[in-house]
Image 1 (cartoon, rainbow, N blue to C red):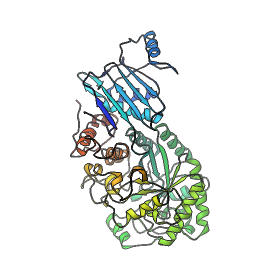
Image 2 (tube, rainbow, N blue to C red; image 1 turned 90 degrees about the vertical axis):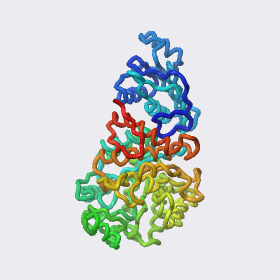
Image 3 (cartoon, rainbow, N blue to C red; image 1 turned 90 degrees about the horizontal axis):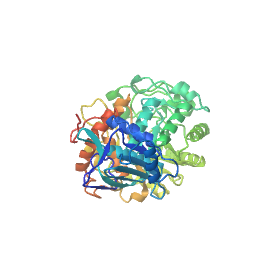
Image 4 (cartoon, helix red, strand yellow; image 1 turned 180 degrees about the vertical axis):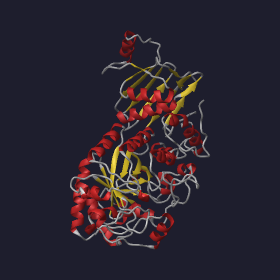
Length: 524
């Protein structure tokens, strides 16, 4: 079985020993997402496919008859796209022979993913292009397949976010987690609390310029994501990572708690010591906290979370919860219980980083996001199990595998190394979501998410350089059958398949890093 450039690996691929479908300007395409396919084919090959629109309810013979009337030969290669309900959510089928290709999705998302798989199949054939004869039946392993973009450490404009949506959705990733607030900045305009962006949005790490999204900007991101079958998951990080709040509401913030770790971080990376009411542009974490026993804190959060819920049509609202080292443990648990209940009362499903699993009053059904290591340390796994005990599930984001901001090379100016050093492409691939936490199975896992923290990331090119190709490994962990389930679900296969995507990525202006150990394809 040859699976060429398919990432993530489909559930079933059967390649026929037969001629493929030639792609020429005469090749017709019809059905939903025809314009998407035409644009992707043009990017990949330079060929503008002929659009032959199917009318509602037309069958294949009626399409062929109309094509003849339009002057298209019955022997002209044809690609038909359709939504055929009845299969698993997001599933699709591709059938290609020498004269036709049919892509059918069980829903619009399934068709969208099938179109992207079809484009991955395109290969040079002599002086032209073809899609090989193949039958693919595919469906995702996990419902939640995400990327996270931190826009707080460095702000990233709408155009960068939408470009990342393009990239992620092409790999069948369907959630965009936006880390909207942190010690360095508050990035979302709120009508109820305008002081936040007026006073806490101007700076980024290293003293770089800041910025924020207006409500119209945020709606644009949400709309663009939905058009690419992605759900935006907004995060307000609480009760730590809240130094920016002190710039607008110093009365709600505790004084920074300075530890030896923070002193070491300042020594190694600069940025100075945090001081309440003064903008912070360093990289230290764990020093800030809201006032847990002040009712004004919860009035503030009622405004913030309520308005965020109104702006966010998706089901999830992330309340952070990580690295709250400036908060007493008992106070932290009290806070988490109260805030997850607030989110649930807003009709949203709360999501929190795995530390929040310690809270005995965690709102039932709260989703936990595990950011510990593939081999858990320091009780990270037990904290994560707290969500399962409370009737929730887990999003798996092991930092030493799929934190895309970890260095891919020790000499890279981009990225950090705190998650067990350099993360190679092979290490990013060689793990399985259900093999990380003992007792946690597929049924307990909502999905997989690959975060991109931005202490060192200023531009889309920086994002590309860190994410690609390792984002492909995250996509495969989220979508494809479990590791070892077939002969192609291996590193040896992946290193060839992801390398074969190089021409497509290059033509799509994705500035990927050609990491060693991968068989990078070239086209003259």
